[in-house]
Length: 227
Image: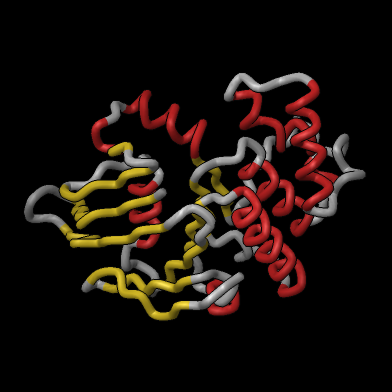
């Protein structure tokens, strides 16, 4: 599903600061992995490269065997819109849209509307425990509820790849655990590939495999056998 091959990235030209070198990562359908590491080692850079928001100096990022570097900017945008889902620490909900319309936004952007799209939105709202809040606005929700909406939105169009960037950083432990359980369950249910970037050992422990990003590359730290 996701195949990262010998990824290298520097900033500031040939003599600039090298952030990533020789990074390799493979994530299969239905597999959920965590990337941990100290601040400044390049976790956000790696996520941006995987998402096609930036291009590497060398190496490849392949999603479903498509090399992102071979796509132009419009092609990468279309691929993100159709095959990727994002969960951010800061939620990024649109304040003027209802919960249902926020969740349904990826479907609308991909030209999906009507009863099937509405049913998918309701299905996800029920899955995250917000079936009765479809008409609410983001300002009427708690932080934990807004993050659950963000998870539902990321999964609405059944993306092949789910990227989560510190999705529990602003939440209390109980809400954080709920979000992590929902995220894992939905990735497994949709047979998506999931990548979680986090500083939290507790969050990383909910994934199948844990990698640590250091100045010397990406190293596997733990493997779990999961159902």
